[in-house]
Image (cartoon, rainbow, N blue to C red; front, side):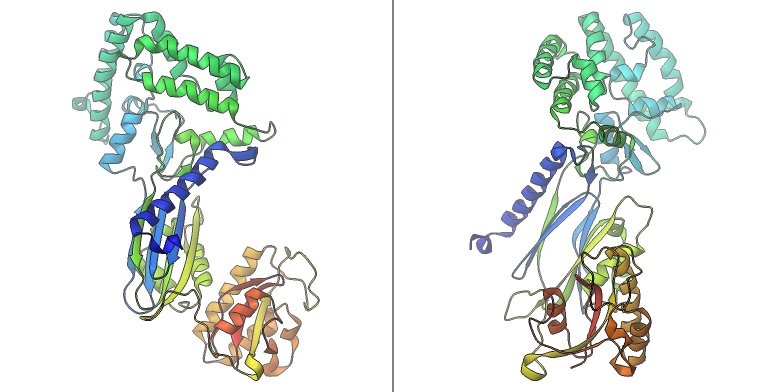
Length: 501
């Protein structure tokens, strides 16, 4: 009851909180089954009457595709663009970031270029990269500074180098020099301890144990508190003091996190993987203790227009499609949302880390709210419908199908859907030629009805409600006369249904 009285802003806040709750579970790596280093983009949508409310994080986009009229963007591409000046400045301030081949890495990468190394340095000690880790005195700091300054000064720019990288590197070298001089003057011994903390790879269990000297989480908590108290003296002079505190806290979190010894190497191997965006859910290794990735949901709300429309919810590679591509690739699938989403996924870059899509079909009238399906009036004896179908069985069926004429050739339900989509696209393209359906049914259908002679191939006769599974029944009673259904999945496989009467 209450939800219908919510304002749009309240609903957007509600969806944002839902994403934050899911994010919290991902960060824990719940039960050891999922890695805390796993990350994803995410999108949630709510259709409430004539209102559409969406929220997403990462590489996501939402577009309204009316049956008549131009597409309407709802949620713009939510993507942390590494090339934007604002994002580059933010990543530089965080430290520890390296962008290579369009991917963001949180682990230090081998880099022979001094300017790139300085920009990507996680802390002031890495900027100077002294052999001992920590310069011994101010004199050594000045000596290292002079050598590096000659290599990264913007006036000494090598041919083909990026001037902005050298400007950032020189500015960071300058600030690191001033900071290190103040730190060494304050307490040289504590500088070494600070360096040890900042240089610890606490996202792994071995690194966390190495820093805190114990694998017991409760003991680790005590050691962490003592270490932070010891470093407190450096707070006012060390620019990376807050980062050191975060490292100590993350070490404890690593030791508290449940894990399975056999899966630990596989989970920790994700530390070496790059991300295509700096906005994501999960991805703990890229958020703690160095917040390279941010979990910042974006949301939007619109009122749905009169008439039929599709809502395209796009994640990953599909989110980069233009509105024109979304429309043109599925122009004949306007009434088949599942098939539309599958077509977008198949057209996406198959080498991309993620490519998913969901399509919602809604119909609005001036008198009533949005509905997911347009029900048709009853036809035939006692409100029954006459249909025919093509069945694509697969090897993941849970029980034998007594009506099957042969085992399915598809190994998975996904393969069956792909095969069904190819046939559906041919059928809607030649919807005036009944022979196309009959040929496809006789050749491809895994149902015994496909063997029926002549025009009866695939014919299931008159069906009343309660005779078929709910998914099949809903589709059969929802489509118009001579029209084709969307891809329908049942316990028998994937169907394409056509209503004959």
